[in-house]
Length: 368
Ligand code: SF4
Image 1 (cartoon, helix red, strand yellow):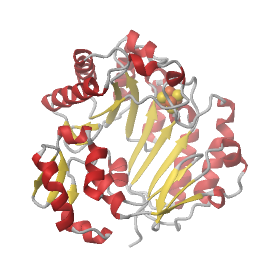
Image 2: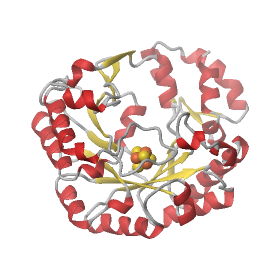
Image 3: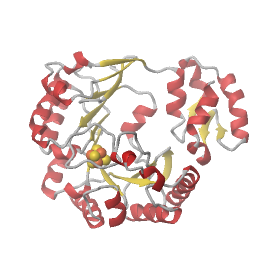
Image 4: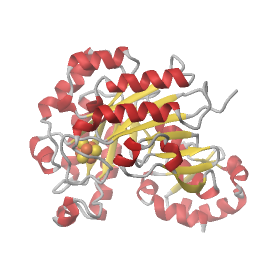
């Protein structure tokens, strides 16, 4: 049987740019038709042989919902090229203010079964501060529309440690999100990325400092656990059985191909990326010829870094597959376990709530 490969489609269009965002995207919506054609071409020319099984497909962005029926054409091309099973998880990211019932129904009927909504904040003030175009009412309507269109698997994104956010406000945001009853919640700590309007405006000074951000993270984690969500990855919470299968492929070092400018792939032992250049992607007869090699995949560092993101943790028994020694890692883990950052259970090392906060330092200590 051929090794399965997951597919990621980057759709770099947004109606407006949010001031904290450093993702590759443009507001030139007129290019969407050309872009759909370029994605279809990239599927037809992709390096995976025809008939390769595809367990998950993810359309991220940008705002992929803006591609409209073009999404269905790309999915058709995927079905023509790959073996797509009935239970393939097919996710689409969308902004709640853009949703309409007719198009949503067509997408659901066309095979999309998971919708990820970028809510980020729960009140007008918070949404305004983040430069989001939607209102809290549209968030609630968006969830209701998605349910009516037949989506049984909904995810929402919430943003933590935003300017002026206190622990109480963050917990209220988590409760607001959970009250919408999504199956999955991603809760990210805002990071001020260099070059963004937020960085230029000195917004960092208005954000909670590291200690307060840590309190926010732990309080939100605790509240979501109480509300029935399982904390399965640093920033991700899910009702049992609704963990993101697509993202788990990344964290479990599975193979995936990324389509579109700046999209990353890990395939046949190599990591590579298509250039972050929309015009070049649109013009390329075969975009894979332009891929930038980023070296081998599947090394020890990668295994430790990615598996520790998951609550399930790092399987000591698998370390030799990646050239690591369980004994050495256990020796380095002992003081971290004592400090309450790691736990060892049934041959698996995992981060505690505190450990998730200091994951970079823990990983460095384990690998040095
Ligand atoms: S946060 Fe999302 S909607 Fe806002 S600019 Fe970035 S990709 Fe576009």
